[in-house]
Amino acid sequence: MYEEARETDPKKYIAGAAGDWELVVGLEVHAQISSKSKLFSGASAEYGGEPNDHVSIVDAAMPGMLPVINEFCVRQAVKTGLGLKAQINLRSVFDRKNYFYPDLPQGYQISQFKDPIVGPGTVLLDMKDGARVEIGIERLHMEQDAGKSIHDQHPSKTYVDLNRSGVALMEIVSLPDIRSSEEARAYVTKLRSILRYLGTCDGNMEEGSMRADVNVSVRRPGDPFGTRCEIKNVNSIRYVGQAIEYEARRQIDILEEGGSIDQETRLFDPKSGKTRAMRSKEEAHDYRYFPDPDLLPLEFTREWVDEIAAELPELPDEKRARLMSDYGLSAYDAGVLVADQASSAYFEKVATGRNAKLAVNWVMGDLSASANEKNVGLDQVGISPDQLGGLIDLIEDKTISGKIAKDVFEILLAEGGDPRTIVEDKGLKQVTDTGAIEAAVDEVIAANPDKVAEVREKPRMAGWFVGQVMKATGGKANPKAVNDILKAKLGL
Amino acid sequence: MSFDSATVQKIARLARIAISDDEAEKLQGELSAILGWVEMLNEVDVEGVAPMTSVTPMTLKKRRDEVTDGGYAEKVTANAPESDEHFFVVPKVVE
Image (cartoon, rainbow over all chains, first blue to last red; front, side, top):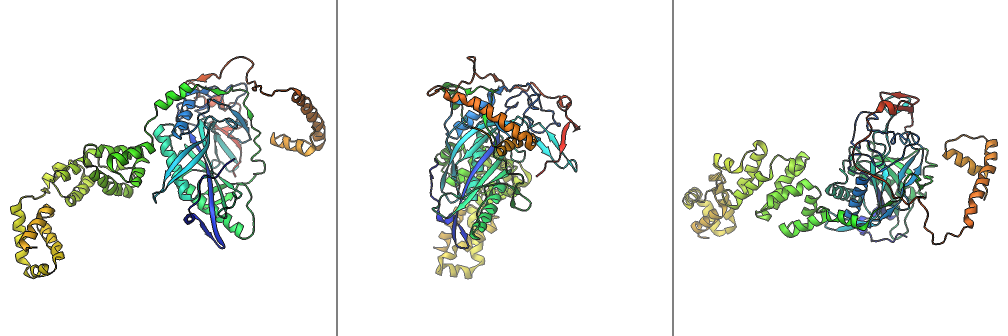
C-alpha cells in the first residue's frame, strides 16, 4: 500500500474557479539500455539501419525460435538500480504481456510483471528555489521494445520496420510523488543525467532512447487520489511539462462542472499542446500476463552485484556535494553543472589549481551566458578550459583587470587564440606603474576644477574621477591604484 | 466453474478469433470442461512448496553482448503477405 511520503507546498496548488486543486503525477520512463545487441537475440541494437536489417529470426518471432538473454543488459539494469539507490532482486521473472499490434510480431512483449529485477529506490531533485525533493522509485524492470510503424508511406497501408523490435528497455516506474509539472521535468532531467553518468542509456529522447508515460490526476488538497489518466509516449522533457499542464487544467474543468474523470489512455499532440483520448481503448489493459515458459527465472549472486557496485562512477548527487565542498559552489550552481557530465568536467579543468571563486564566476557567468545564447553545452561554446583558465590566470596575477578580462573573453569567443598573447598584442596589460597613473590623475584633476570642488563636499563623487581616469588609460589602469592615488591627491 | 457465453466471446476477441454464437455455445462447454479438469490441481496441498520452473536442474542460459545475427532483411520478409523495400506492409493501423 502506498503511503504518501510528502506534503505539497500550498504555493504549488492550482487555482480553480472554486478553491485550490492539487496535482499528482507519476511517471513510467522507458529507457533503452545501451548495448551492442538486443535483449534476447544477437541482432544489432544500434539506432536506425536499413529496414529490417537489424532483425534476427528471433526478433521477427518466427516459429520455434528461443530467446537467450544478453548478460550485459542484465548488468546494465543492475547498475542502474544501484545508481537509483534501489533494492536489487537476486531472482526475477520474465512474463509475457499479451496484445496484438503489427509492430509486435510475437503477439506478446517479454517483460517483468510480478518479480522485477529492481525494487524500491529514490531520485533526489534540486529545485530552483533551493528545495530538495525526494521522488520514490517503485521498481525497474527489463522488457523488449516493439518495432516501428510508419503511417505516412502509403495512403491505406502501414509500413513496419522491426529493427527496434527486441531492443532492451528498462521501464523505470516512479511513485505518484510528483506535485508539479516543474518537478516532473526536473525528475526526467535528473533520471537522464543519472543514466548518462552510469552509461546505461544514452538518454537521447529525439531518437526515442527515452520516452515517458505520464500519469496525471488532480484532487482537492488533503483528499484521496483522484482518477488518473495516462498520457502515453511523451518524447521530450518540455512536452512532459506541457502535457501535464494541459491535462491538469482539462481535469479540473471537468470536475468543476460537476463531471467525473474516466480512467483512460491519452496522447499528447505537440502541435496543439493538447491531450486527446486514444481510440479503441476498451481492451487496452487486459494483458493476461503469465510467466514466459521459454525463460527460466533470472538469478545472480550478491557477490556479482557487489562487483558492479564497486565499479560505479561518481554519480550526480555525490559530485554535486563534492563540488560544493571543494570549490564553494552554491547548491543551485553545483546542480546545474553536474546535470551534464561534460559541463562539470569542463568546470573542474578550469577550477583545478586556480582561485575557485573566479572559476565559478567565469564558468557560471560569461561562459554559461554564451552557452545559453548559442543553446549548446559549456564545452561547445568554443573556448577551451585551458583558454578560460589562462584568462583567469591573467586576472589572478593582476596582468589584467576583471573589466579588461571581459573584453579578452569576447576576443577569445570571436577569434580564439591564447589569452596571454592577445593581451600582449593588443596592449591590454594593466597599468600598475604609479607614475603613469599619477599623470592621468593629475590631468583629470586639472581639467575639472569645478568637480574637484564638488567632490570635497560630496566624497561619493570620487567614483566619477575613477571613471575618468580609467577612460583616459583605456581601462588598463589598476583600479585599486587609481583609487588610492585619487584619494591622496583629492585629500579625501 | 463454468464460462458464460459473454466470457467466451471476450476470450475469442482477445485472441482475434471471430466465432459465431453457435460456436460460442459449443466452446462454452469445452472450455468449462477444460477448466474443470485443471481445477482438480487445487486439491493438491502446495503450502510451502516453491513453484517449479524447470524439470531439469538448470539455470537461465546467458549470451555475451555481441552482434552475431541479423543482416538478412530479404529472408525476414520472405514470408510476409505483403512487403515493400524490405518493410512489412499491413493495412493502415494509425490512431
